[in-house]
Image (cartoon, rainbow over all chains, first blue to last red; front, side, top):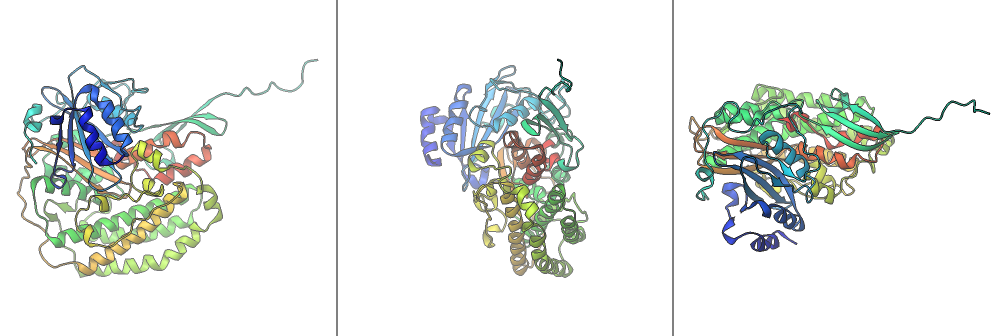
Length: 160
Length: 372
């Protein structure tokens, strides 16, 4: 399966409005997907079948919810995919470590820095902070921050 | 009659902490090993001893103020992180970079890549018990540090790039010294190969050791020489061309088996390719300004952005979410060493403790880049 097949296959996994092609030169990825909680794992499986790798995983804290970001990429030219899923405070996400081993550490990092738990993760310990730390430093209620935004302010309208 | 022999030793699992202050871990890394005799059942790398919270720091610093932080993540190829960060912000904001500045960036960045690979070469062979190659590598590396010191003002933690250009112009002395260095390293290249590549002890310690194939690399998201050693010609400089790389000729060296020896050969060939790039860039170095028009205070438009460059260890990415102010709303650094180290949880199991050093050294990690 190739990257183009992955693009077409996405139509069966998420709504058409949730997939948006972007200008790679301007944004750094060629496809942005807004997923729902239960679509995260099927998308990861489709990406794995399409020979993509999980390049990075992170989260962003907004006033209304967390946005967890998955970046998939192929060993080829300009085919990065950004998958975004909203997670409310206290909610968890299904793990994709069953599909990508890379997620084992990426999810530990997101859990460590944001406090977002992942269901069925086999070893959800802190990665960077000491195990007895009682805070999640990249949340906007920790330390010095310059304002808290809502999701729509950043992702609301397309900029590309 | 009771046996006069001592009770037989009961076989048991043994736990060993390798590190956090072990000379071959190159930084503060702890490998928690579960052993069966001399064999590793399970390896658990424990990172985070050098966590400084760079990503949190970014949120309370102006884009300009964060620049020195980037070279503190990977102190062996600081200029590459510098370049990646600056280029990401430039693309977001739409700042033009004059051609002379782009060429200077490529030359200095490739020099930095060579110095990083030379340091890796020296310390890796020293981990395997050879002391002499270390002195050769550091002798050559010192010249690069002197060249970069003259134009950037620092030896390791560079803050040379600026939004829209570089901090200081290069002069004829820089060009002369760099050309002389290229000739010198090439004249000594046979010595490197005679000392190490053909050494039978070295071959025995690296061939077939720590095999990471394409499938494993894909599952763990490995990039850089680890991936290229497995035969995948994936290099950000080619896949997502940036700066003036499309104008320069170079090859992407690859291995076949994906063992420690292949990764070693890939890095050595990359040094040769970097020399080629520098040679061409020096030849074409255009005249002109070194700083383009950039606002005093950078304010990228609202939105998210990702930009990647190829560091000495793999793909470095900057994921930046901007809210339209002078402070990044969120800045995530995709560090190549994190994925390259994680693969060891799988690769190390079933190997000998003695090979741990060889395998760990061959993936070339810089721990502060993982810890951030």
